[in-house]
Length: 233
Image 1 (cartoon, rainbow, N blue to C red):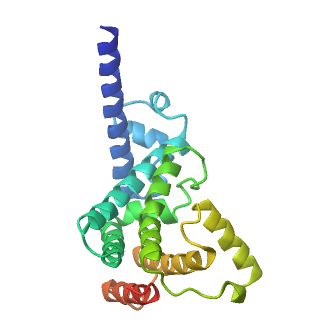
Image 2 (image 1 turned 45 degrees about the vertical axis):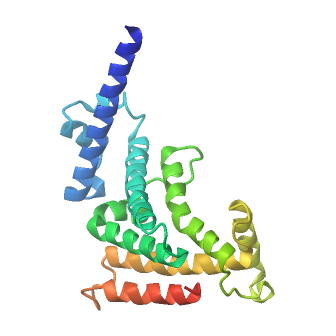
């Protein structure tokens, strides 16, 4: 009996959390990130601000949980595109995941901006937090594919001796952090490709290139072709 009551309470709690997250997302999409406050979210779900603190200790914790949701949704879209081509060469899976990332961002600009370009979202630095874990899973999608590519068909890399000492140190630290999946020089190529794609996507979603472009899909595809050439795809 006690176990059954506990199970019911847990189901009710999960349902309430989903309602809270849905309310936060609605406020974000319709009114912007500044509208996502404890009191506003509470009003949306029909409870008082203090009552919401039974679920989250404060605004930062709520924001972190909602951010984790967005990360998981974006990651799932990329993983689905990757897995739909499970038998294809790794290069095709890389391109599919990149296109899925842009498709999700284009369909959910408010959520993408919240995760990647909003001062509201907390930094991705709290070890063990749901936001941190979801962010790491997102980061892992393209990293794992690039590691697979490197192991099966290494791509051209620069001579490490030709890189600035500070850059070599940082790349070595990153290589260690990813358990040596990519040596420093290969990590440099991976990160360079990633920053190009990610930077262009952020500029598109934040409308920073509207002065020149009304349709950035061909620009993104051109960037993707450059990345493919860099990786020898």
